[in-house]
Image (cartoon, rainbow, N blue to C red; front, side, top):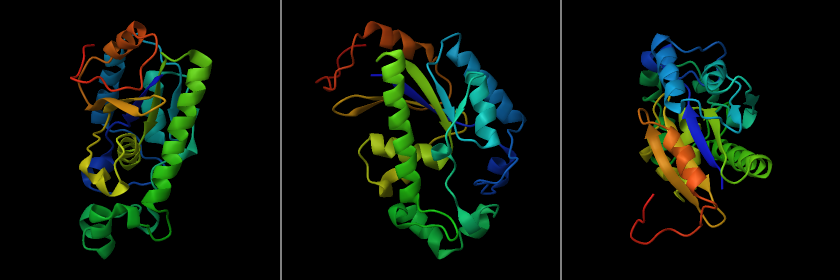
Length: 225
């Protein structure tokens, strides 16, 4: 089956200032973020992605265009709608009772004037699995494609792939401009890379070319590449 590269957008000033940007418009990458995505492009080399899908927010579109000029936008990959939390400082939000719910019981967290983390996960997982099936049909089972989104969204997708309850998703770290690779097979998803911020990504294409079809069985003992 195809491999999807889950890419978080590069760093923004909101990330470094401790402000919850959420769906605020006009949040672009800062100088560090631009450098991060430039390095991301170098890590991909000249490998061709079968499809690049992104959240419509500027910081994701800017990141996605380094991967491919032809970017499909999907609102299901949007940042969580944090509602009244949007634009506020994290230091202030930590004082609220809901902060502890978000930390310890995220499946029960719903942001005032926004959406729940459960709803965020459901739409994002639906988007990734739907695009993955379309890529398999259009470009073959060995294709590699990318979905560019936001930290919490990608953490929720990874939790689903690992079979974790949403209450465990805060254990996952997704850094700016990182790449996480997943292959959805008939029986189970396989996590191939997690929060990769510096490795050569071209090996994912080589591994796919060596594989006529990825088995849904896990290899006992680990196997070999």
